[in-house]
Amino acid sequence: MKSARILLPLMALATLVLPVQAARAECFADYKAKQEAPLRLHYGVAAIPDAACGSRAAAFQALAPRLASDGWTLLNILSIFGPEGLEQRKDSAGPYFLRY
Image 1 (cartoon, rainbow, N blue to C red):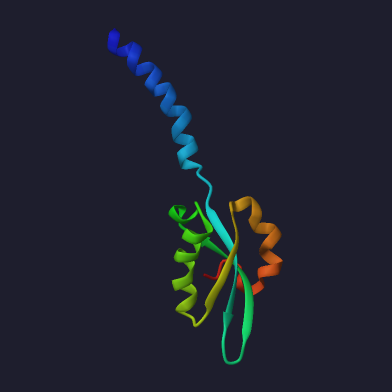
Image 2: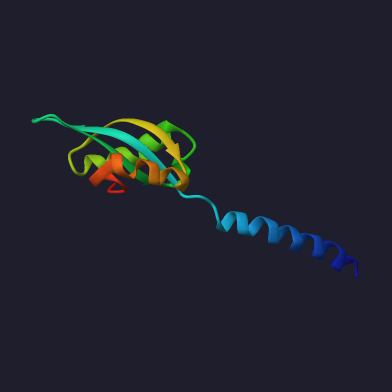
């Protein structure tokens, strides 16, 4: 009986916490990048790992190698946001929307 008094509140807490964990928002960053010779610039939006969502520096470290693999140099991370910010940036990013 004593274990039921402990177990029941724990189960109730789990039903509140687990859906929040499962529904955790994806993380995205918008950025500017360049290529040299000839100079080309682009604005893009990329998905970044949850571990990189905490700061622009972490997002920069996560995204720079992906861009570099195609010859782009990441200039800066403009912002970090969740899925609610995707639609408003889609047209501006054009072909670089979720490309990297």
